[in-house]
Length: 401
Image (cartoon, rainbow, N blue to C red; front, top):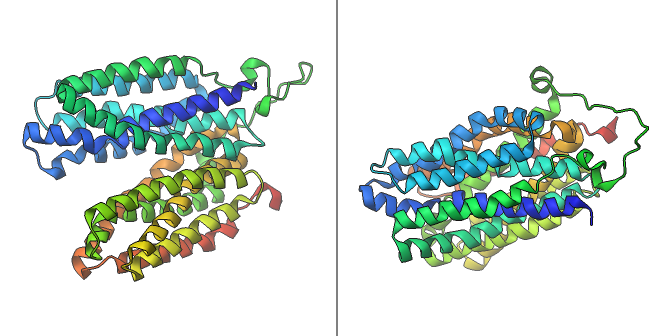
């Protein structure tokens, strides 16, 4: 079997562990830490905020190093960051130490075992089925969100939080290092091209043209794609972070609100498979357009209805669209900028996207505080997505030339 498929399984596994153990389980870990140090919720949320900010700032450097160094080496740094982060968390004596550990160490695990490295790896190994493979691997993030929070909660209840974090640190180290050691940086190291095509030994070696910072900053496609992704992530984080409060505001229960999040997550899996499959067959701008339209429909349903069934439908639209935009994003970057430059381009785009991504949740909350409802916020998100929809035709694909 083509070794790229083994790497797809490894990418799925690494995304499951890094996102499941770090991002999705943050609130599970934060609760006992907050009780131990008598810290406010705002204080305990600084960890995930600092991790996101530092990760965004460091992303261009990581992207550049990924295209120069061995992916395996970068992933090993991620493993050590995640494991040492959990180990040091078990020895914390004050609340200020928590965001410091997340911002410096857990950030390494989330970024160097996450989409930045795994998508770069798969973009190098696959061409014809790149979108489908990126979508299948991305399901690992959703699976991690289902698996790790209850497992970590069980460990905390069974062994007390300090011992639980030490067990988690050791477990992450033991299960991820063997997987990372199986990573092969490029199919060329196996004498193959993308998709397992045999390379002609007599053919002259053609090195891909490296993209410079200056040329990337002057590239219209880079900024248009960044605009589209910024507006999509802004709407997604704005809805996801406020979904339970929205349900309560509409007269639904907290349990129903939590169920809506579950629907969103399951629909995200379907979106990654569906959009990943069509990403290899259609103009990727159409994939973006479909994702944007689904999110707009979801926003309108959330804003105009108070019916639980309608809310479930809206959550399905939102999850399907936002799950699907990830393989579309990965595929379009690989096609327009080349698989060899994937890490550098993704690394440069992340900090550009980050501001609007971070603004979505507090903006929706602020508008609710001022107006007493979420409809104006969702209308604002929908208007932004219309701008993204208008921008899509101006992205120049190679087929347009």
